[in-house]
Amino acid sequence: MCDFLKNQCLIKLKVIRVVKGGSFGKGTALKNSSDADLVAFLDCFDNYRDQRETRHEILEEIRQILINFGSSNTYETEDITVPRGNPSNPPRSISFTITSKKTLEKVEFDLLPAFDAVGQFGDNAYAKLIEIGDSDGEFSTCFTERQRLFVKNRPEQLKDLIRLVKYWYKMYVKPRKHDLPPGIRLPKKYAVELLTIHAWEQNGSPDKFSMAQGFRTVLELICRYRDLCIYWSHYYKLSNNKTLTDFVKQKLLATRPVILDPADPTGNVGESGGWDVMVSEASKCLQMPCVSKDQQWQVKPMTEIEITVQLMGGSLLPINANPFTKVATIKQNIQQFWYHFSPSPQSPPVPAHQQRLMFNNTILNDSETLLEFGILDNVPIALLVTSNDKMDIFQLF
Image (cartoon, rainbow, N blue to C red; front, top):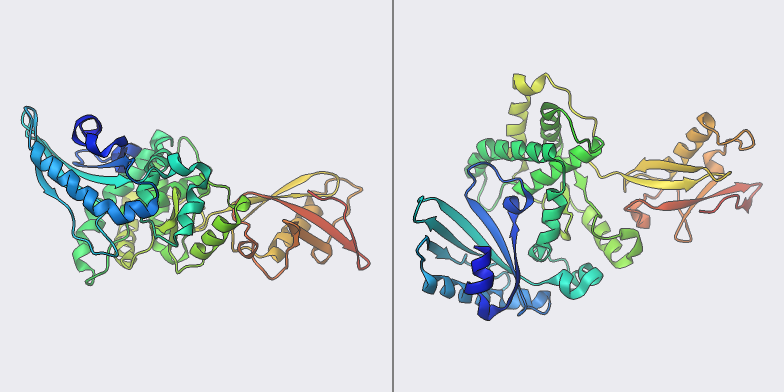
């Protein structure tokens, strides 16, 4: 189908490339799953606004091409539909079914046209995205390849755990969508997938682990959905980009759960009013003998970062924290380390009230959090020490 779209069907639209997205692209598709996402990057889009403003007519053109093609000797195209949209939110995909004439097997496709943002803007792709405002994940298709690689390169056992969680979602959660009030949707399956990756990373990212413990951990995190605040910075360095940092800060302050798409920071995939239904099913499953007898991993519902403080004598002290950790807590950690693991006999413990922490030439106030200073990923922090009301800089990172 990818070859057809690129080499035959969409020649007049000048397809740059066609990428397999969704579960098939990530390598986490369930057995006998019959749907596939294809993202067609088109050179008729010069920017994000082009994709928004012209995608409806592009989808109609694709629909007509598929209708005219109809069928071949080996398969038949059926049920070609473009979802309804409106002027402020035009449809994003076209759906159709391919039926094999030999085996009668059906595969449902969602085809999404997209702007090649990374190819066009490179490292500025996210800054350009934020310039148009908070798009709430509208242009996540532009980063399909990054979404795919974020999952695809993980160990196979983690992918097995993702499949197990998705199967549970399919069998127990999805059937309850009819219990939701009108206008309320279940949490996205992608959110559960990312939650599984977060649990695994918090457990040390092992290649081998207990599937039962991992499954239980994900269910426990689902039950704590009001505490979830998860994000990744694999594809951008937040501390080096004030515009992006300020944007992500606001996203993290939103009502929880917050689970930001690792490839598109504008998309909070955890945003949904239907978490209570999923919590209900998770709670039931946690009572089952096959799950209840296993211990969960000791993980936190927030993304953790590692800041590095250089102590007197040149020793480096890594401290685990989260964006909502207060500066006063970091100082207490430094003081405790000094009492128990003094770098040298010549380095006496420095009490918290004599410590000054500096980031980007700014002294960090005790009562404020790392988030308020834009510290959202692994960064070095300078330690300054005061004595007799005079600031002496013994070590500066």
